[in-house]
Length: 173
Image 1 (tube, rainbow, N blue to C red):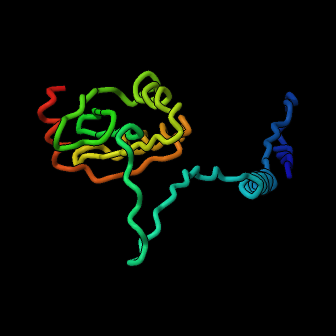
Image 2 (cartoon, rainbow, N blue to C red):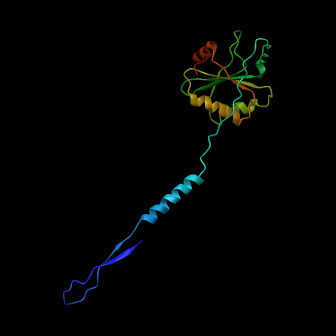
Image 3 (cartoon, rainbow, N blue to C red):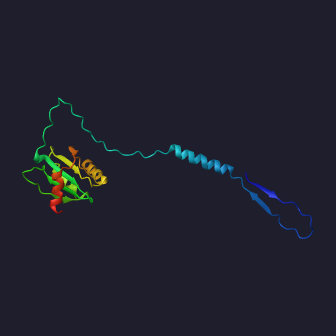
């Protein structure tokens, strides 16, 4: 509470002056109010929940399970994640008889997203994502986001093979 202290008369005669008053403010209620507001806002605030993308993991095959069907070359699109944020792709699968035409693109909306949207007309499209050992984790997350954005239903993360690495080296891109 605030209180006003008055100093007494000094007993000297003469001209009367206005009495000086000093004020003292008790800050205890203000501190109580601040802590009440702080606890109120802390308890009523909701924390932002992390957004998670669901990834379906394959079930471990049993010994008596049949071999999964092979992917048709016309239904395959292979993405190679290289070092220095480079993204290569080619249509089909890599075979020993012929080398596919390797193309370079970027991770933006005018790059890989256009490629995926053009090929999404094929309902049997399977995208094989092959990250290199030197590629950045961020690039893999970006590709998975692009799969989600373009509503690509079938895609798989696959280890990059030696022929794919050699194809990148010999391409000159």
